Picture 1 (spheres, rainbow, N blue to C red):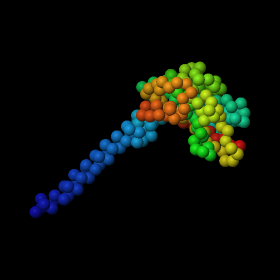
Picture 2: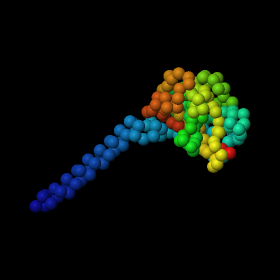
Picture 3: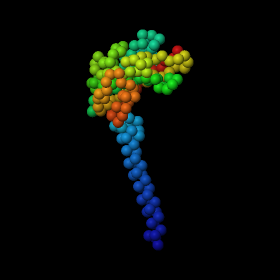
Picture 4: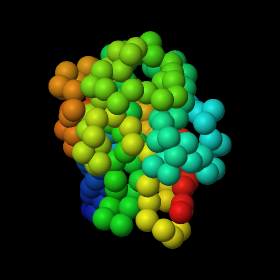
Length: 197
């Protein structure tokens, strides 16, 4: 009888173990297939990105906005992780009235690149290598903050280390770049500034 009494316990233990195993397997599969953020697909490494143009979380000076010279700010970062084949940069304003507004898209930057100098040219190719996409102003390269009057908006400068070159033509859209990046992000980092009018 003691063996019969223990049978339900053994069944519960076996079912619990199976459920845990299935959940772990599903979690791993979700990470590989894009169920988790792209950065975690390859281990979730972070990259340090900084700028001399404004303090992190601080106000973006007018010279980098549509109210000034509209220059791109200086950006710098550390060494990319092993296996990096290219870098990509996406700058956006998630507080725009109609949703995230893209201010800059650059991709296929050589992995040895450590900096983008202030005032990157609005050209299809960057001087040190890499292509520039079309922003939501409909222009190639960088166009700075230009929010409507009201509460300051946030501007995120996000850098991605990729295990492939995207091979997209210059002038690609953010959507095209993000689609090509999917599942190939080794690490990423960001710096944010604010601007209001």
